[in-house]
Image 1: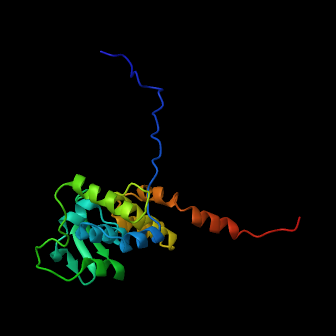
Image 2: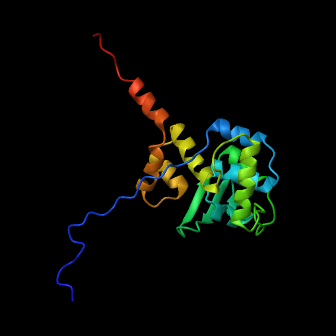
Length: 189
């Protein structure tokens, strides 16, 4: 038997904050204008950029989940039921309604294949970022925060259970910080 906890008094190692890659609206426009050899990947990625859905949820999305301009679905990661209103842009990216149990996006089975398509598409659009579906989720969050959507609402739109998860995105928004300090009054010196 060990008489005392050998880890007592040892401080835990804090993980380094990872850099969150996201796309600017101009980069999204470049992607939208660029050719992609797999149009369904392009459409799904852009949809995710305007809805914040994870690739796992995009893949499982069926037409029965689409109701009156909203998505009603069970998140794969959290198993929580979500009711997500869609922007006009996201609704256009969905396309025409299909058969109830038919998937909205016909994506390749392999995530490796999807990422390969994304890399080629990024090169075609002259974007020098490592494109993944999670980048589209980060793009949605930063775009929403940059356009004055409050943190609580962004958290709910992303389906986060804890707002501290969403606060990571708030640190990305340097523009908002610059605007905030530029509003401070001046004094004559």
